[in-house]
Length: 293
Image 1 (cartoon, rainbow, N blue to C red):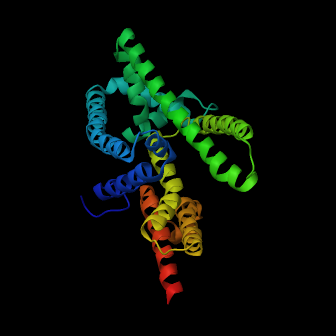
Image 2: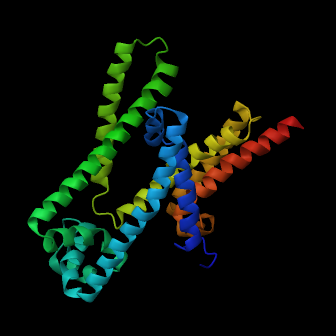
């Protein structure tokens, strides 16, 4: 509960959760396209609040499952050996020997292999019939999420980029063709990203970090347009350019050599969306006030 913004403190998680859900419910096309499917603004409003209230118990259930798995495997450390060996072999790559894998596995912390605990438990501890139902549920959830993401990304490209800047006179047939092509391209990019994620220490941490990086700029611009009614395109452009530079610095400053370590971003990676959003919003407002004076 200390005011620590470098590690995963309560305040880092709270701020990240607030800003990322503000992004999700406010402007994420995955959510917005569902609002448009509602029969009225009132029904759309109900769907938002229903999702908010369900979010809390569902999250609590996930956290409880994780806590139970952690406790079970800590009480049965012999079950962790195969998990650690698998994680070590993936991190080291193919050109390795058993002694190197064993040595790395012995020094691993729970955070290094945590993502592999649930799959291991499912495969080795759950009866076959029940395991099939769980795998089917996971696949169906994944398919619905992936299809929504592919559809939303392709729709945004077709409507907001292609029809606005590339071909303003596009026919409905041609637009549908572009939509199909964009869906395939987005799907292929998603597959490549999934392959690139193989072997990472924590898929959830990587996802949170990437979400914060990409959402920070859009959320800041969205809030500037929603709250600051007198902000112009130039104000938005000024705030966005500076905000993107800040986000790039926060995202890549850890790659700087040791002699420039004082220039590295000092806060937790999940704070990128917070700082990036506020940078765009505040700079846009400052530009508006300076312009009016």
